[in-house]
Amino acid sequence: MKNFTKSYIILIVFIFLSLPAKASGPVSDDVLNHIKGAGSSDIRDIQNFPSDLLPEYIKSFFIITMPDNREKLLLAGRGNDGTFYGFGRVEFNGELNIAKTDVFYEEKDGLIHIYSQMPYSAFYYGTTYRWDKQSEKLVIVREWQEDPSAEALKEVEYLLSIGEIDKASKKLNNMFYPAHYYDSFEMEVKFLRSAHKKALEEYRRGNNNAWKLIKTAISIPGDKWIFSIQFRKRL
Image 1 (cartoon, rainbow, N blue to C red):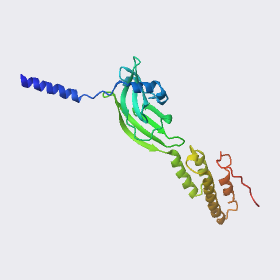
Image 2 (image 1 turned 180 degrees about the vertical axis):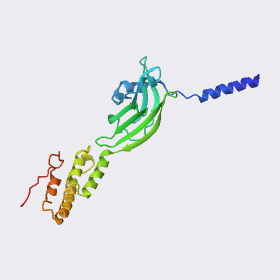
Image 3 (image 1 turned 45 degrees about the vertical axis):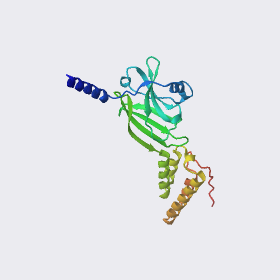
Image 4 (image 1 turned 90 degrees about the vertical axis):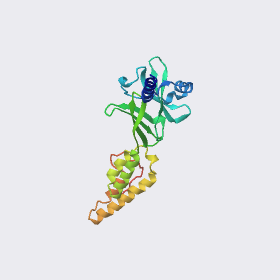
């Protein structure tokens, strides 16, 4: 009988330990004051999150910065009874700029996406998470970083190297935060050098209108050209 009782207790303990630990509980006073006070501007609702994936006692999810560190995130929920619940820290290993952070649920992949973009820059850090309803935790799936403007600038440099002035101009004019990535005076020189090299090549091939490439480099017709050089044709 004693052996049976001991085995039964061990089984109960094993089952209990194997159950996923719940992450939720009412937020601390510090977090509550942060949510209702100065930290309220840091709240980012998880857009489009399906209601059927929410815990029964929660009506919506959001992330917010930690009261003592605006570079760390907490997952929280608004309870049906008005109580705020915390679901633990959100693993986010990149740079965080909460002012330019988007959070949403993507139905196509069933994941939560967080994108945080740096100030005055196109650089952003992205992370996707799977919501584990059983353990009430966000499980990180993938993280990466990108900078579309830096990539565009590389393409501009390549286009200039092969004399594609028009294409380089269009690519440059579509960049976000250009002043963060290059000096305009230096870029003017690069365009002029590229156009001069290309014009010489065309002239040597017998193209008497090669000088127009220089004009193209200085003021692209119809473009919102970023430079202010005025072209004057000298006869």
